[in-house]
Length: 351
Figure (cartoon, one colour):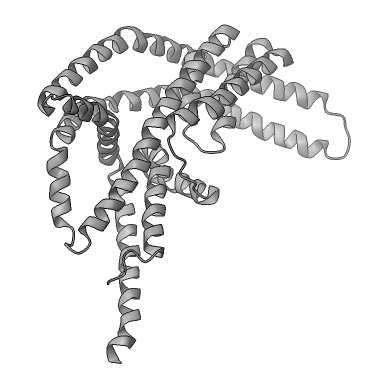
């Protein structure tokens, strides 16, 4: 009888301890976000490349030799990327930085023209105040636009340290993969080991399919968007294409966000409804192809996550870990959902 009264308290204490542990991990993750971002970059790359190593092993090739061949292929791709892709991206970025103050001044000019055309009637004073306020903010933005853009470019340059370090981490992650798995499994409670391993396989299948599929979708969207905007003569097509590919990671709102830079540049250059319509139609076709042709092929199974939970996870992890938090929000939510589903079905109850 005495034990029956204390069992709920014990469960409640475990629940509180788990919540506190997650909060502590979140704080530590925020404090070490740069180190964690390097680790996450390496982990994602290793996760994406591991199927190639497994395929080579099935063909009878030792893992170390498969890794050697993989790194030779990656070295060739890196040389190609640095020789041809990086200069094009650099030229496009420099042009964007050069033209950014002009874009801001153009917006300010249109705002002032709109203010001058406002009739003297009820509510016009408030609208003029809003325009004046926006113009002041645009003045500040114009003054800081160049420094902001170059500061962003400088941060990206220093983040190249992660790119230099990640191949080393990826090599060891792939080489010691089986050792890490066996060591982790040996730490699991013996009476739960097979059960947790089965859940791990289920989570791995869901996360692996999502990550590989999302990377493929982002690359295809970026290439199609760049090609379409280049054909239409829109300024900075590479910048807009890369932005569209990155925005495709965001669920629900990514499609709308991806079109904004392209629409802005199209309006700034042509200032016609026809140009905006062409850009809108191009992105509509691209996202139709993505949604109905590409995603059904690359995503083997849907995660079926609640939209509200998805948005909250993206916002929370994006605030904590930045880009990598946004990318991993859905896989983490899927892992929690799978584990929670097994918990609700009583798979963790003692027999």
